[in-house]
Structure formats: structure tokens, C-alpha cells
Image 1 (cartoon, helix red, strand yellow):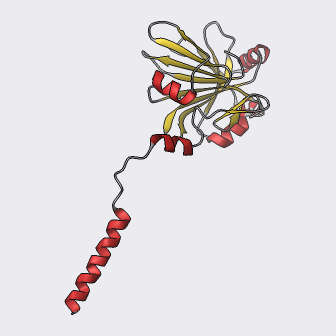
Image 2 (cartoon, one colour; image 1 turned 120 degrees about the vertical axis):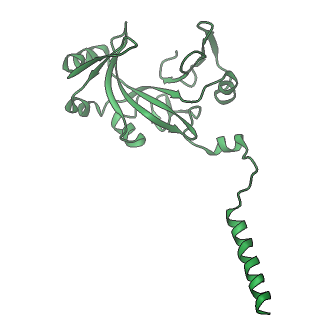
Image 3 (cartoon, helix red, strand yellow; image 1 turned 90 degrees about the horizontal axis):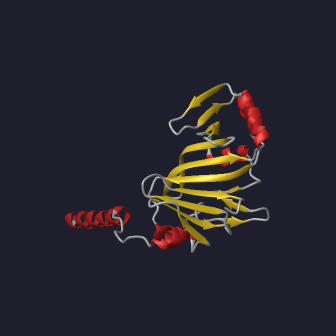
Length: 212
């Protein structure tokens, strides 16, 4: 009788272990997961002043508020690309939007006069391979920029974008433009979005208050 009791107890314990640790191998429904996940690149909310994505409202949310939302692992610098006056950018090299990973760039709402003044106050200039110049700003100057609103956002996904993915997530664009044989633009002015697919380089999702 004692042996029978031990066998029954062992069987009961094994059953509990199987219940707890054996994972159901059924694949989750992708559409269901995407509906439940928040903060994805195509989840754009229209607001009174424009658009909100990644919990950041363009033209309203400040650099300081964005850092509070996204974390302190960032770089703030002024970038001047060839032919442009420049822009102050908040750069997050490790950004996650749900299961999607990539880089996130936030552009401060500053005019050309303010940018020119900041360039003269830079503590260091670095010449990049792209031909752009990166101006380092002092901590005091960076702190003074914290109340400035974010006017535009660029998401650079690690995963490659496809036309099928763009159309299924962002919907039918108002228009498209084949820039060359490798680059195609998808315009969504009603969402403040421009999607750029580059088969030979990086893909981009740009958000702004401009009508592109």
C-alpha cells in the first residue's frame, strides 16, 4: 500500500510539472498580437495640434519630456548636412517599439537663426563620412534646450521594410514616388508620415507636421 501511495503521489507531481512547464507550441495570431501591442510605428494618434506617435506629440512634447519617456541613453547634438542649415537632434541608438527595434531621432523645433547661433557656441565639431558636420554642445547649452518641443521624428528600423508590410500596417498611401530603381517613397499626409524603402540601404519612417 505504501508503494502504491508513493507511485500515485509521484504521478500527481509529474502532472503538475507538465502543466506548469510544457509550453503550448501553437503559434500566436500575428494580427491579434499587433492589436494588443501599443507604441508601434503605425499607431499614430491625431491630436488637436497634429499627431502623436511613440507617446510623443509633435509640436507639443519637449525634449525633456521625450527623455523621460524614452530613457537617458541618448545623444544630443547639432547636425548640419551638406546644403542644410542644420538641426538639433536627440538620438536614441537602442529603441524598441513593441517587438520592433531600431534607432529613433527626434528633431527640435528651432529656426535657422537659432541654429546658426548654436553653431557658434559649439564646443567641438566632428566631420562625418556622410559629409555632415556634428557640433557638440556644452551641457549648459543642452540643458537650455530641454524645454524646446519636438517637431519631427525619424524611426530607423533594424528589420527590413517591404511594400506589403507598409501597406498592411499604414494603409494605402495618398501617393508614392519612385525616386530611383532602389528607393521608393510612400506619402501619408493625413498621418504626417513618409515611409522610405531603400533596397540598397536603410529604411526610414518619418513623422512631421509638414504635408510632405
